Amino acid sequence: MTSPIGRTQIWTVRAVQGVALVLFVLAIFGVIPPLALLVPVALVVVTELVQRTSATRRA
Image (cartoon, rainbow, N blue to C red; front, side, top):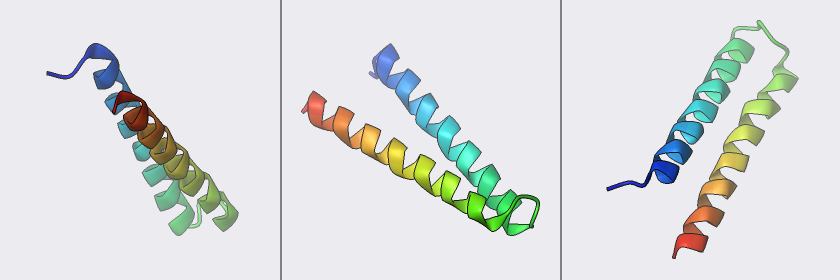
């Protein structure tokens, strides 16, 4: 069973991934400038790093 902290972290990661996807789609359709594509990429990279460091701490 997942601890409440783990569950919260999963929801946080999902929220960040959702925001990144929305920004990516907006950039593709030209609503926001293409340079803004760096923002979702950075968000995904940061969340991956957070997941890996927290997984390393648990192990």
